[in-house]
Image 1 (cartoon, rainbow, N blue to C red):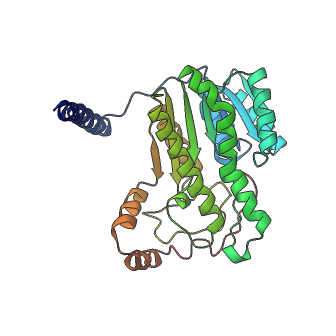
Image 2: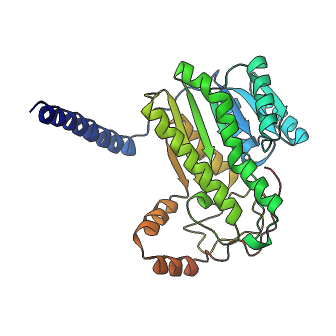
Image 3: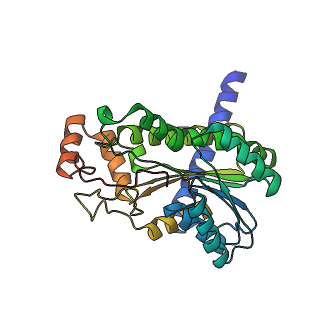
Length: 309
């Protein structure tokens, strides 16, 4: 009898929380969440030397954050530092770091903690794309894709998450990709690394929930191709539904998602429909839709930078 009452009580508590969470979600769908204040927060951005990373750095500079810029390209990173100072950043620190090398990530992370302090917003943005079909992609390039696009997330989390846990305060941002949601012809290694990054970030999110660390937020970003040069030559069969994203638009959406503590951000919104169709349609039907929408030919004319960005 006692166990039945306990089960009934647990279910009642669960049902109350379930209904409240659904109502809260509906309210915030209609009324945007209040944007949090990130002034004084230490924001580390990997791949800050160009493209999306640079734009994110400039936006956080204008918000009064303390910036820590990581990139393998020293000149590009120093240029971002200069631009961030011009944008009004009170404190900016640039570090040359090859995120594909675990020992280097740990070494530079220790340097950051000594010279700047504990990172409270970690944005894993660095990425590399080979643009080669699976059997044409050299082993070394495939390993590099995983080292930069996925494994770097492991090492940066290991380096900076403990301080966040101690304070129950922080924000983990994973820049994954639409290619981390759906397989794309000609991007086997890239898709695999971005699926891994997505799964890792989501697993840590659940782990933090289990540890009752609600003060540490997670945002997982999955954009379609962004016009930063990384995917130059790529096309889209339906630009109205799946446009090549402009960098400024993508950066604005990402910063808004972080400030509103949004967990998942897919860009464009049509990707949410893509995920529903992927789950509901028979595989053959889904492949026919993919073919009709030009999804088999996105990488046909790829001439991208083929470098860490």
